[in-house]
Each structure stands twice: as C-alpha cells, then as structure tokens.
Image (cartoon, rainbow, N blue to C red; front, side, top):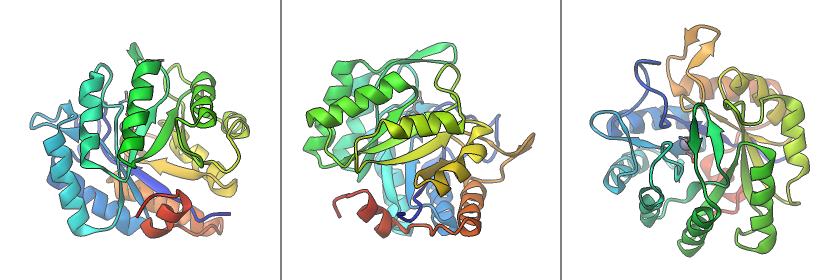
Length: 271
Ligand code: KMH
Ligand code: ZN
C-alpha cells in the first residue's frame, strides 16, 4: 500500500470566521495554517483565497501571494481550487491556473449544493481539463455522486484526462452521495485501474471515513473547508489539529504518512 497522503483543505469558500474563528483567510493566516499542517503531516494544501472582506475570490494576485508565502516556508504541494464558490464564473475559476500550481481541483459535474446549484457544465469541465493538460497541472477529479464519477472516468478513458488519474470522493454534502463506507467502496470499484483516490468526508463524516480510507489504500482530506469541529459541538482549534489526528490514526493503524516528495511520486506529479 502506498504511504498515506493527507490533504489540508484549510479555508474553502463557504466556511466563515463566524462558524469557526480560527479559519485562515488572509494570505499570511493561510500560509501559517498551511505550514502548521505540513508540520503535522499534510503533503498537499487545497487552496481557496479570500479578499480583504474575507469573501471567496479567485484573484490571481491573491493566489500568487499565498503561494509564495507557503513556498517560503515548506515544500507542500499546492492544489488550487478551480471550483471557487457556487456561482463563480468559469472565466474566474480558470484564471489562477496560469500560475502553474502542481495540482488543481477539477469538478466534473453539476449538483444541488445545499439550496444552490454548483454548476459544472461539460464544456467548462473540458476547458478546465485542457488548460490543466496544457500547463502540466495534475488534476484532482472531484466527484460528489456516482454520475460525476462515471463522467470523470469517461474523461480518463477518452484520454482527455491523463492516466493514472487521481480522484477525490467528496461524500456527505447536502444532496450529494452520503458519507458511509459502502459508498466509498462503491466509488472505488468504478475507478480505472491504477487510479489513486482520496476521501473528503463532510462534517462528521470527515473523521468517520478517514480510518476506512487509511486501511483500504485511499488517501484523506481534512480541514475547515469540509468540517469545522474537532468533536461533536467542539470547534477545531486549527486545521493542523485535524491533520495531526489523521497522522496519529495512521500511526495507530500502521500506515506511514507520505512527505510531499513521496506524494509527488505516488501521484505522478511533474517535479
Ligand atoms: N466551494 C464549492 C462549491 C473545489 O474547490 O474544487 C466547490 C469546491 C470545490 O470547493
Ligand atoms: Zn475546495
């Protein structure tokens, strides 16, 4: 089994400081949070940025600033969000790719996202995929239900996405596929051979699905984007606290945690 890749999704687009006061929003706060996550065992940071009013943004300038601050501190793999917030135009979502992060998220379908629609039309998915190919950016294929997974798999089979592909099973969103081990294994059963996958459980599913992924060869994403609690009713002190718990779980379950260099190899990322 490969070593465990832990991704820290430190900010997201929906979480606010009112929900958890420790949410990192400014580039400095984000860089410090990312660095703490790296020290705790993360090898990838999934990044959204916020403007000076803490509103979700796809500003190239902000992505550039936070990237530099993180790279000054550690060798984390930077994974930019191209999902942005619900309603962010694709022209803005694609823009930060010009900075050539090592990875970027690629959401391969539209879905009810709470009371809103997170829209990812096939033409936009394909445009984002082509741009990632052009710039040698490794996509993380984000899937929230089975139809999205099957579309993502078809993109790999058609060659638009390069094999071996990396998938993120986002389980437990409101109206997406629910967060239980059966769904994780069902999704895994549909992957092309040689694919890698991680699990991002939403809310309480973050902790519940992590050990399942750890013992079954998957990778794990944690962080305030998906969950703001350490335990029921107790806000997490930091993203690093959530990462450290996964690293400890991995130690107990006897799966080694990957460094960023090892994660690059596991994911076939250009150096
Ligand atoms: N904010 C969500 C609507 C991604 O980063 O690629 C989408 C999202 C996915 O966060
Ligand atoms: Zn995201």
